[in-house]
Picture 1 (cartoon, rainbow over the protein chains, first blue to last red):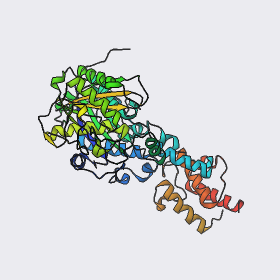
Picture 2 (cartoon, rainbow over the protein chains, first blue to last red):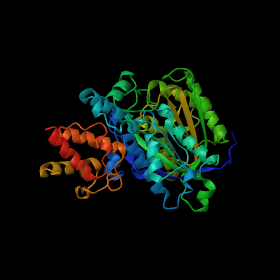
Picture 3 (cartoon, rainbow over the protein chains, first blue to last red):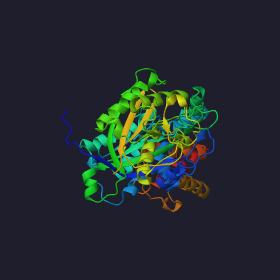
Picture 4 (tube, chains in turn green, orange):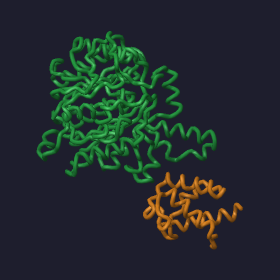
Length: 393
Length: 84
């Protein structure tokens, strides 16, 4: 195989987001600074698919694909009217944990009640995890690589990394990248619940001493990634830069993190190496922070090992957004990019008493800051670790 | 072939909803593919909806052999008569 054709810098020229914290960048950022009601399940209640998809397309798209199309359209609108590059050099990398399982669950019911002759002929193209990526490629006519990574709750971060790599290596000039998830079905909810993963109190509180699980949610976020030189040449508004990324695996247990967060820590270090930065260059960490006892203990230990006790401000937004699984890393990347523009770190809402055992500087109130390189973490069942380093424009 | 006004009206309402098109576009010589945007999967789904609405059983590949909306109207009319 050939070596990469280029070593280019990658910038974000558009962003779109749908989340229980708000739809659209402005509502989302405001949402991240507003304490939510305690709810174990958090839907994007203000999302109206008919505003984003024609009726026929909406009927043939699982909700995770509807969310992806809305986020993708917002991102493209945000990029503005500049002509797209050669379609063969435009790609998609959209991650998801479970794809269209909501549709599958409905069709399982149809099969049981009405028999095989009434199962929808659209079931397979709606359920397949790559349906969201395919829908984005179709809508915008993007004919380069169009792929889906499914690494559970790390999928959004891994997809942003993979999309950025396509631009950095010179394969693509533009990539829509991010994540989408909606699996708030009775079966999925029961399954997470029986694992004791969900918060009985309905209060997501990352790194709190009293954290008791995550709040299941849905959402999608898509970034437009482009070659920095081309973006600057046309005077594009730039939200930030993808400075580096890394991926590691715990090889320890299918759901429990490795002791001391060793796999997560290794991933953070590799991402900084990829960005050619040292720990002292990092101005903030956007944590995975699911609010489960085990995740936050492992991630907290990893952050403290890499950066030292209280060595870096840590924000977690899942107290507001809930855990949108395969979309989470993409939502969090959007939050980092918006924190650059706002010159403010978002608060870790839901959290009141930071677990003293973690030795973390958890950002509890909105904090003014000088934007700088920020590490965004995602970890998934299967032992998947993904870290992204984003920097201001 | 004579068609029943009641059946054609019901078919038109059902088809407009299934195909997400306006009832006015459902004229007899409308091409299912070129004018109404039908694809093979939508045809299967439409066939299911027709079977359910009219209590009919469509032959396996019936929806694969029709090319205009008029063909569908005739098919449904014939089956409604034969299977009554």
